[in-house]
View (cartoon, rainbow, N blue to C red):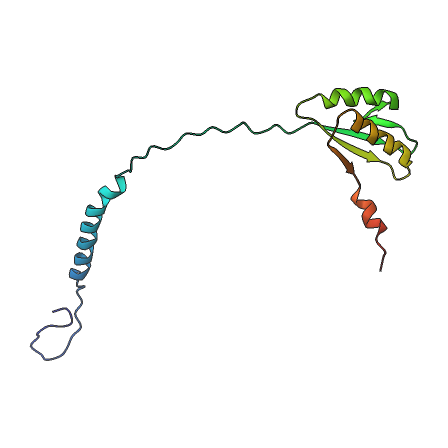
Length: 146
């Protein structure tokens, strides 16, 4: 018996042996369960999956930075360009595939006339992606201080 035994002096003494029989029973049951279920893990379902091909990921278009300073001078990336030569460069850029994005950076004091001419030249030469670049510092400085 696990909780005690017969002794001659009628004093109940605790049993110092650990009863491992329930633990062995549980381990044997788990062993039988794993033996039965192990073949199910290796069984694969045969499927005839469809095949598909996707188009390659589109390449990111080139970005052209067109800057206009306060005096009205135009810069293609970092190189100065005359307004007359700008149309020719824009036409060459519009022929590229994918079409590059034109980022227009203009100084605060630039006349709107120059910006409008550059935008018109870009549109007439076939560039459809035009973005304006601003400085976030200017927006923070323009906020009224409390």
